[in-house]
Image (cartoon, rainbow, N blue to C red):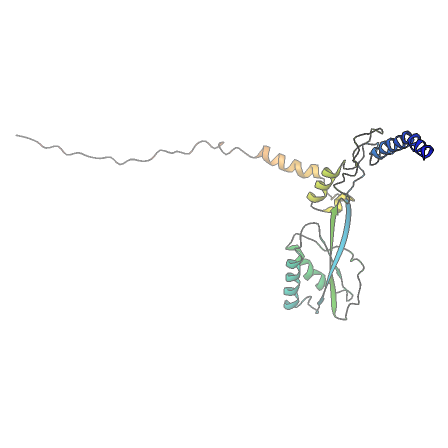
Length: 228
């Protein structure tokens, strides 16, 4: 019995050392590893398509189908950033014009090509497709780095979450995060210069002088009495 006790006492320093080393290594867990100034949390843009089949006629869309389509646009909360396209097997331009007129009420134009959708389009019908993009930053917030030690001089895993999440939430058209708007025949600078030129060339409102603010007054007469 005494030798066994001595062996246990002899092992205690080694056990204490092992526990200390284990706790030290555990403290290194969760240490940041991104040593660059680029955030690993970036916005991800996802697309979803919604479809509605409408009955067509030679003149475009019947009134009843136009009302159905308007109601669907309102239900879908059609807005800036959405893309509206028509899968028109009959190639009737009147159908495209009718749908384009309804979409223009929301400030949208018809896209040139429609995305591929599931399902068969019945004869005499056309399919209206809404493509909607959403942006979000997955994995945010990220407080996985729980260690106070930062031997790598790295940025926090949560670095960039606030800015990129706010940008994804505020951007009007999430597609702009993937590619910018294509330029038109008139540049933005020319457009802004028009407004500046109009402001500079417009005559001041006081150039014609002040308006006569005087009011005309009537003359009053008094009578006098004569005495003897």
